Image (cartoon, rainbow over the protein chains, first blue to last red):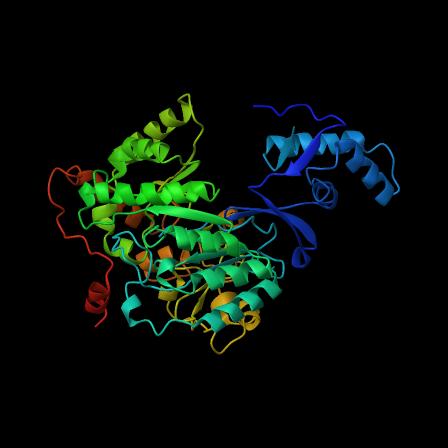
Length: 94
Length: 388
């Protein structure tokens, strides 16, 4: 099953079956799930912590571009979210 | 009791300084209303000292969390036998643990699950066990089914994923289809069909519990058919019994790598079965800090990495894949915990594994006659008898 296409208006949220948190001991964000853990790299952590079900992908991208003084991040953000939706880490709210 | 899967492996575990004990397992009590013949708990549990009190468990949680522990398993025995379970869940959640309850469901009612949900319990793993003493009645036991149905309904009502764990052995493995149908009826999202691992009580009952290769293959085929059927998705894990393999499991991802168990009396172990390993003194959280236990104590450093290895492991090109397998299995079967796990076909003791399987092949089919040796049920009486 492939995820629906991620567009600028999509509002992603971390799925309720996962718990996202910052782990100082690992210097990383982690996604926790029953009896397991995914250690996230820095950009994955920055994207996921903005997935609150309210912000759109466009807004998340703009916020990241501001925070990291970068441009043209949309494709990276959308690409990561497509993978995250496939893995059920992220749910898309209608 | 099933064995939790350790969290993601640390990539260079062999040479790097140890990371934190990412997985903390608290065996809160050895008390249990069940008497499972495949339990991995130590057979001498009746001789175990008094259980830790609530405040000491809180201290263990604080110290482990400060070191970076993040996954918490609450187990036993039956953890619901502790009436402070709800407080322990709340404290663990407050500290930032992901809290997993590993339970048979016996003793779970709406008041308790509702309190634990509010306290921040993240996940429940429900094990299917034999709640009667008649193994062969396991599947038709209406008592078991009614209890599990009730608990499954509560788990759904409180929005937990339905994760079922079923321990397989010679006496129930031919009923995998019925087990999966039952799991489906209960609305399970995940089912772990875990073949018995032979430690503790299961070791005592090994010859009676060991399935034949044909049984294992049939069960796998049924599982595969079930996965391919149309309808409601149910993820099924089939954990092959390692006696049927030619390479050992990377047990606990290596001792002292990610996993720390604290037993009911406060003894700290690098894996839940490790207390049997001779020559190691296992520290107690009552008088030693968790940090000292993890980084300094011999019990946790001795088998960390690969410096302890003997041949054929020491020079084996595959040693990083499995770190020589399971130390407890090596000790139980060969008498030396530093030997290669005899599951490995490079081990000079591999014949001990193949002989155990061959014995299972020669025995009459399960159910066709009474077991040659009576099964030894996990009970305080049997524990005291085995360890006078």
